[in-house]
Image 1 (cartoon, helix red, strand yellow):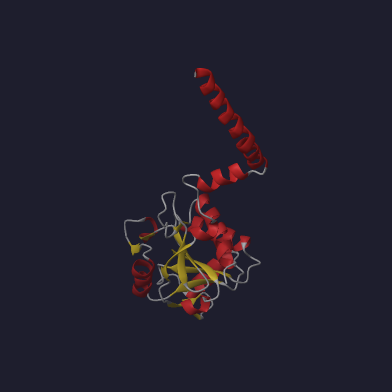
Image 2: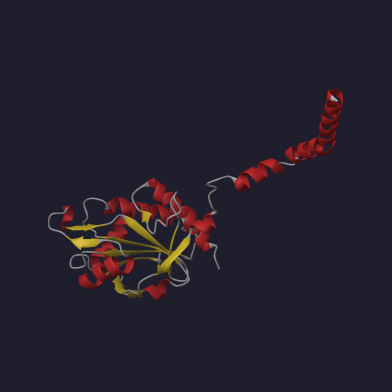
Length: 228
């Protein structure tokens, strides 16, 4: 009986080998196994387009630019743009933020649908004339980069309640003001957009000081420029 059992098991193994081993070999040759493993891998990250999620509509704003012209959020419809809050006499993070904006402007200099909005949080000093000199000092030439000024309470309302990007006057802070070093990314339809962090949560705003934030913006701006 034992011999018959061995014969039966051997026969099953032989049939398995004849039927399935060639299929496994073909899958390996065709990279099917690798493809399936990649698709089912835990923690597989989404595509760049999936990462740029909608947060909500950009708050309405109407301010005066460095050339004395009124600029509103509707002037940027049809453009992918960045928003920052800064002040020209800032001795701490603003110069770094402005330089990183310049890097992004230079990176997308051939994209007519890319723009930047820099809003001062010290409008009593940062008049249109001062902002014009500031733009010239930075070497800004793009017609789509506007440095904006206006009523301080109105600007703080836009910053703190519209964008939820912190800005405040503080006599104890260097330069007399404090604000976040974050950039808001807005799509062509006027929606604030964001990628997700490693845990699947929206970052909402991009780090305007670190290289990682600027590289993420380069990727995501490119995605949004290609959107219809």
